[in-house]
Image (tube, rainbow, N blue to C red):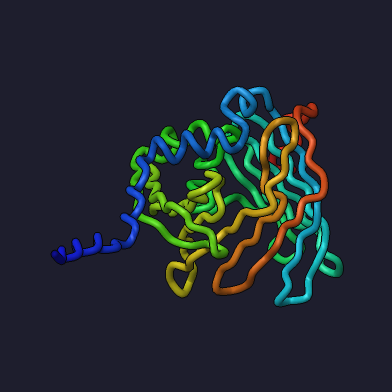
Length: 234
């Protein structure tokens, strides 16, 4: 007696991974950085390294001073050009460079600076009240989840988090220019552990005008920094 062979079970492609929620993405991000408790132990950061604009053959040094809750000063010294400083003292910003001299931040720069916080990873919702998962993408051959983050004022930004390790790998924002809005992409890589917190030691920024690369070599936390360092020179 012959029996008909049962049909083989059809092979189906694996079901796409359901997108995580915004909360799941940010919980994983904070955990990947070292956890909220480790982040909250820090109150200042001094980072030093190199700054390069490969397209223009320009290079120099960079120092970044950050102090809780939201004070920042970036000093870039480019060989043959001079020193560029950008700062936010908590309520106003200023910039100083050999070409344009000393100036206050524009309204757009001010709005952007207000979105900065020393504790941004654990305070994202305070600065971006509207958060939504836009889907998946790839950055440097890594799967990422893309979150759209809309601040109370200004245009939304896109943040891409590594689907596997949870770290932030790309941020995309827009800036006004005389020719209309331009897209700015910032890539974060080469994360290293410093005092129990992971930080990106390579930061690459790309816009239609030029691209720049910051490569950090030294990061120190909880150094005393006088608030006066961030104030606009008289």
